[in-house]
Image 1 (tube, helix red, strand yellow):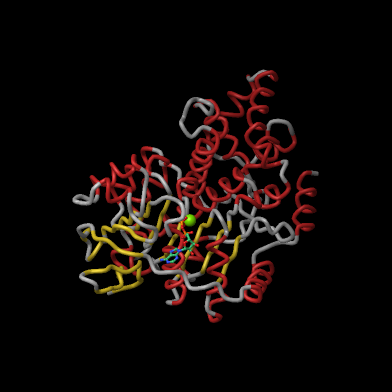
Image 2 (cartoon, rainbow, N blue to C red; image 1 turned 120 degrees about the vertical axis):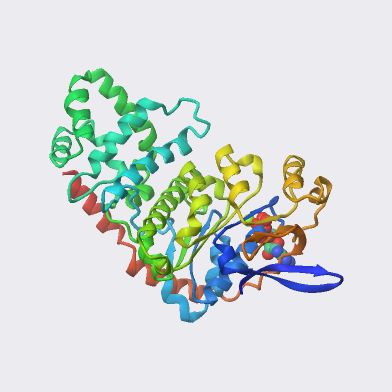
Length: 426
Ligand SMILES: Nc1ncnc2c1ncn2[C@@H]1O[C@H](COP(=O)(O)OP(=O)(O)O)[C@@H](O)[C@H]1O
Ligand SMILES: [Mg+2]
């Protein structure tokens, strides 16, 4: 049964909508194409249909334009469900703590994610900028700041190595013998020279986030403003605006990676539930290569059992790290390809045979080839066109209402956040 329309196909002069069924959506959709061909519009159109049909969605938008468009079209009856995370709203920062954990599974998962995120941001090609040594320190330091009922954030990690009182307070809560050994067997024998070297190393990675008040006010709050398990179960509309123009590229990537980690964690935790209690949730990630770690590659192969339907897009296959590209090509049920460059056309012609390299290079805007999952099987490739976007409607009232509701429900006044931070530092 059709659950959403992707676009339309034209066969012997007749137009037909391309329907996509719920069970098939669990096998995920990947879309590729040069800039300007209409990719974001396809996702916006699909996401709006999901919203109109009362489903839960998350849209991760690196430009902000898709979110503005969605906000202008969301029906009034669903305004209450919108969770708008806009980090550039500095007066009412949301809290987003990568290391907020409620049990041992979450702790382990998040410490691993933390390491992966640092690789992704600072050493994506694994050239040794971040090596086993940093990993070891980071793992133990992250476990230590998380210890105790008050928890902690990654921004407190450097403090562990300069503030003895803080270090003592945190260590008193440790229970993991390996982490205890790190402090009692290893750190006590580490010279001050090495410690300061380690501190410099941490500061070079964490410093930019600590010194930026926008990032500090979001990342240092111990309690995150939202948890994905509740949002997914409650069929919320989660809009994540990561417009780099407003907050800077590395900050946008960092926040996107944290959001994705916390979403993945909530998804994996659904494994413990009966399958009829895994309410489907629809995730859209534009320019997804910026927000995907290696964990994500493995989730792509498994998440259908968890009720997470993913929609991913980016511009070039060559942009994707090998593990992620292989996972996308190997696992995705529905594949949409607009015009691409010569290098990608070669790869696509193998995936989409009998469509040729040449076909992909010459595709007009808004036209694509699609291999659609139908009843659990991927179809032969056929051609289609995207649906034009509905015109922007009057947006300001809607957007203002959503912003006000969200500031009250999820944000904290900036002065309060900063005061809490000062008190903790005392
Ligand atoms: N089917 C369509 N018909 C008409 N205009 C379209 C269609 N699809 C997209 N557009 C317009 O084309 C422009 C580029 O689309 P966009 O979705 O932003 O492309 P991309 O994400 O691939 O860069 C936008 O202004 C959009 O409104
Ligand atoms: Mg786009």
